[in-house]
Image 1 (tube, rainbow, N blue to C red):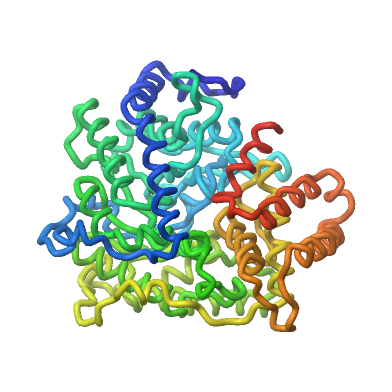
Image 2 (cartoon, rainbow, N blue to C red):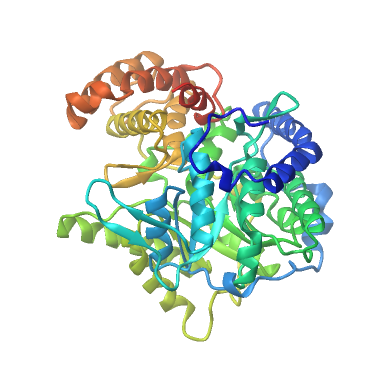
Length: 526
């Protein structure tokens, strides 16, 4: 079953019991994943043909029904600040020690899933759950260890579209989501439950309540198999695709035994808006920097998520602040001001917590949510938004005004280039120009240009965006990146390879769904 090369320490997680569970889950559930993905393609074809996403008439009774989720464990009721990051050892320690209530350990968008990183990530989380994790920097000799009150740990598994090619069942690569879930659950559930926590998961990139139902069956199967009370496994689902925002209540309903929250995965959501509405010329987005949460379609998304979650007793998590603290005092103050504005908007909307990508932002985010939540509450479940005007499909689909600039296009190219290069090199979480970029933000960068080319958009200068213009800029920006990173780093990196992939993705007649799929081929070959 395991095709990957041996990774030191893997025997600690590849136990007989863990592999037995993984095999059982693959037998029961793996064959259903291609059917779910096929359904995505069928729905997309209807949208490409002219339909617009809308709330489902066949599930109106669920939206009108009087029901609640099962409940929220005590250690998940207060999630006012969550820090996220990949599952490398130093990151895990720093994140668990940060001034945050939760650490989301990420096997998805901030991890380039080489076999060694995936396996070591599971080993690292096992050690963290047991309080046995430490790290000594080979460069500085600095020693890292957990403090006495680490954050609550939640594991984000990979999306249903991603395979784990180093593990096969029936001579077919298994769904990466099942691999991540089975290994984390089996190796940690006893220890987590013994200390008053539990096996908690973040589920990414859902597109429908049918996919949520698949996860509900996986959870129920495992709970019964291990003689656990129904609802022991808890999950938070990211609402980060445009189709999913129209099925939030249905997703909560299908997972009502296990779910505790929905999250505004804003960067993936913007990417999904582009991807889902790619054939609609009246829905073209402007420069990425102009697409902020104040825009009507994103504001409606945030407010509807809060209203929907609180109506059903679930928490409503805010999105990621991708800023990184700056070393210069003036620049750092500007960063903090931007973070403050962003988090105050979320808190005012009624979100119960928010995400940061860097420990240096946690104090700022915490202070804002402390102010809005107050001393008498641990979340904002009491904010129902019942007096709001109804949010209709048209509100969630409103076109977004803003400039399409040459500077914005060139910036997109440089960001995508540097991110793809780092991803190929095995790093999925990359600081670029003061922001912590992951796969979602890189996806926006390359799909924005693709969308401008397809719909023959003009830049603010009047220049028509074409494949030829993009190729010219790509050559120029590749040279600029070489100048920025230095000749030695450029020569020893994978920038040319990244440029080839970026050109293929951006000039393709059909939009490639995820850059991580062709990227995975380069990663696994390296």
